[in-house]
Image (cartoon, rainbow, N blue to C red):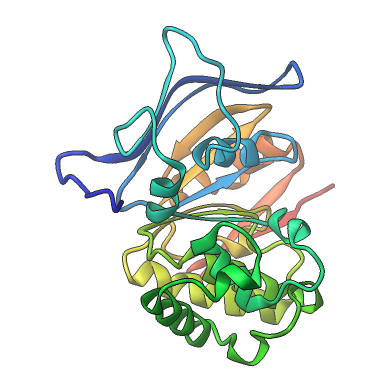
Length: 270
C-alpha cells in the first residue's frame, strides 16, 4: 500500500521520549525529534553515539522501550505493516552486504526488494511490471553488465549501487542510508554522491549517516548531531557544521572549511 502524503502533516516520522536498550545497555536516551517531508538530513557523531540504532528504529529492526510518555510514529501511525513500510521508505544498511550468501547474483539481490528473500526461483515469479522496474533501475545505476555476477564478487562501489537499486524498487520518496560512503575509493565515492544528488533532484528525501564531512551532500538542509546516545544539536548546515561545534562533538580540534558546496574537516594543532 502506498501511503498518501497528507499536505497537512509536516513530518513522516516522530520520536517522542524514545529510549532504546540492547542487552540491557542504554543505546538511545530521550530522543525527541521529527523527521519532516522536504528535508535531506545528515547524522554526524562519534562511533558508538547511536546513529545506526536511530536508523534501525525507523526500519523496525529495533524497537524502543515502551512507556506511557513515549511514542514513535511513521506516517502518523504507531503501527505499520513491514511491507507498507518498504513501499514508502527505501533502506540501505552496509551490514546487509555481509548477509548476502555466496552465489547470489546482483539481479536476485535487486529482485529481493520485491520478494523479501535472495532466491533466483522467486525472482523468476515476480510480475512483468516488477521486472520492468528492475530493468529500469539496472540501466539507471549502470549495472546491466554485472547482473549475473555474484554479489560478493563485486567491488564495494558496485555493491553499494546494487543495494541502492534494491532500495528503490518501490519508488520510495524517502531513503534511509547508514554510512553509504564507507570503504569507497575516490571514484566510487564521487559516483555515489552524483547519483544521490540526482535522486534528491527528483524530490526523494534522504536521511543518512556519514563520518566524512566531504561526503555531506550539497542539498542537505538539516544536520543532526549525536553523542553518547543523545541528540545534542539540530540545525541547518551553515550553523551546525562549524569548527567549534564539531571539535566539541568529536573531542578533537577540527578546522572546518567549506569549498563551494562541500565541507572539509582538518585536524588542527593535535
